Length: 268
Image (tube, rainbow, N blue to C red; front, side, top):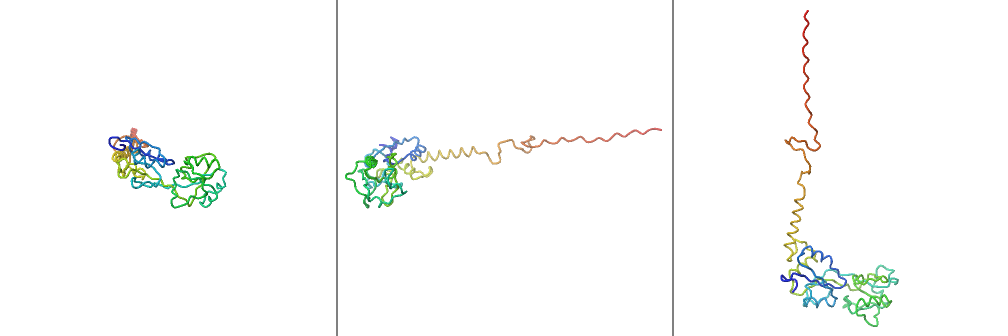
């Protein structure tokens, strides 16, 4: 098993479009002794990978099966419509869902937008492409448009395509998920990282070591600072007998003028 005392390796699954880099960097700073292994999965593979033990936790898209998985929502993504660069919809900065009514809108089998309560706008294509990548190819060929989370539009970027934000449509939510009832110390550590907990407030196994390390840094900084009143140079010290920087040399006492010797009187 991963994430245990016997095998201190943390495996993090992530779906297309999600970029875990900033959290991975924080992990390596706080727990350098515990390798973090990234596992790329599709949106459909994410749940089975977590339940099957192929990963300790995952950055996935909601919804997930709450009967077997715990999840903490992290953020919602802007939904965009992918269109050819010369398409008329590019004239606007933002597109309303109703403006797509006259266009074919591709609906790939791996679509990750939650359409349960809303109808996909636009006219349906004759058949559904297998993947988002296939749908992108169709849009580039001039066959319809595509609604996706903005991160997927960036992931499948092409020079001949662009995208615009769309309002009044569902948004994809990214969440941190892990097997229900298996909140290990390492999972707790990663929860703290994605939630922005500081080193001192982290509750995972890396908290004591990280806090001690931070305390040592603060102590070193305090010792490196000059003490109050210490200018770092040779000051003028009382009773030292020395001359400090900028001190004027003491004046040498001039010898007292001697009285003129009395002239002897002339004898007549």
